[in-house]
Length: 411
Image (cartoon, rainbow, N blue to C red; front, side):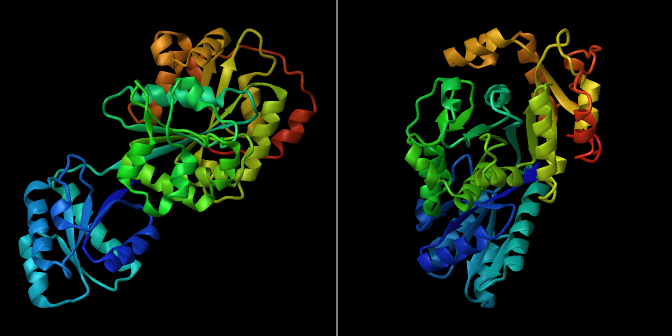
């Protein structure tokens, strides 16, 4: 889980706001969620940011009034006064008004990060829990293995809990169909956000998402195929950053092409659910993918293998043998219920609503609890392994040598 500080900037001086905005863009674990030019117009809503940067040069009296108001009424919201002057009198007035820190510009990234962390740590020590987000990428080892079904239904199950805020991003920018699985109409898409990333803030983000009755928010793929090319890697990373600052869980349903957009998502995420089946083509692709992930530092450690559509009575490849081939343990198993999955997809109704007691729904619900840290356990028990005779002969030896053995993944 990544702990992210949500930041707001308030100052009448557009030049200072731009300077701060540029500095924040280069900092990890910090996300700008609001920007306001009028101290009187800044709202003390229920969803205040973690830290408010208040410029005290251009409109000193109103700025100090806002600092005092935030100090009195903005429970859990820290205030950092910002100025181009280190005048002792101004510093003293800001601190007396309630500012926890005073930042003098120009400031280095280290100085800015130090001030933000100082304010954030103080607020957490006073009883406010640090905001955190877990970003989960769902990838398929081949087309048709059920990765979109898993992404949609797992996210819907997580969103049903009142103590979570969950968003699903459809990153298959050409042929994604997460909106079909949820039977949702939408006004804005991922392309709209990435094209307007320069003015993207929390308010624009929320207006761009569509909410499902389960509580899940959806950011769908572009409507027109021609718009897919407008989704670029760097703007996408900034969209991910704001989503991580605003929601407890971010799910990303990847395409099967492992494009630069998909790789950017994999680098940003905390967990990669790699969905496969116990068949020859899928296991070969798992080995190839794991080998390619080794090139990116830290990527391989994020991978959790999920076996979908398990059928113990008819599988020719044993689970244990599959683990030996790919060099790591299976994290979770999802039982096969093809007819039910076809029904929920065609009806646009997630499993949690159409078949909450089904074995496949319960398997996903258990996985959701483990991923969210509510419980620990191994998904291997979801479907009992049976003995089958391996029939793939010499190919096993070739694949198992392609990827070194890895330590069992932990959540």
